[in-house]
Amino acid sequence: MVSVTVVGATGYMGSELLRILVNHPKVDKIVPTSRTHAGKPVSSFHKNLLNVLDAPFVDVGLKDIDTDIAFITALQETGSRNCPHSWTPE
Image (cartoon, rainbow, N blue to C red):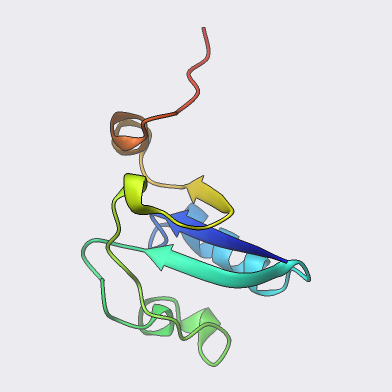
């Protein structure tokens, strides 16, 4: 089993990723992040996840992520600027 953080979980890509992850048999913990919606339940923003994922959004810095996997679904300039080990194509 793995734990997963979704950075930018309020956007379209984040929403779709959350939808996929809640049904994944090997995922046991999902940490959805959002600076502007921190503390609010995911289902208050993503109605399709009502009674499926009621975990709260958290505001966590990238250096403080403590899960097995992290998906950066935020805008490219936000993710690459804040991700200390991001991959950039040459």
